[in-house]
Length: 87
Image (tube, rainbow, N blue to C red; front, side, top):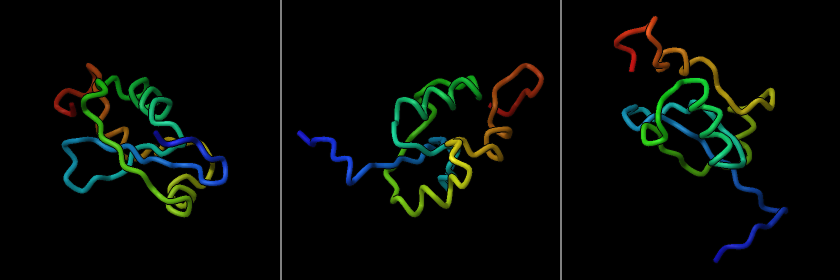
């Protein structure tokens, strides 16, 4: 079993399973928190997402303001009655 080591934090990027380019929609240090945030914003089930571990430098470049969510791709994939066909 892997133990948590504060000197070597882990970072994750979340993307949609059906996205062949694997464009990140959110990043963070906790898969469950990042997934919950993206699900709340998109309304999509957790099975629609995949994640991968990323380096600290990649995390910092994808998350310059420390928010975790990367807003641009989310709007294209939100499921809402006002945007049919973008599920």
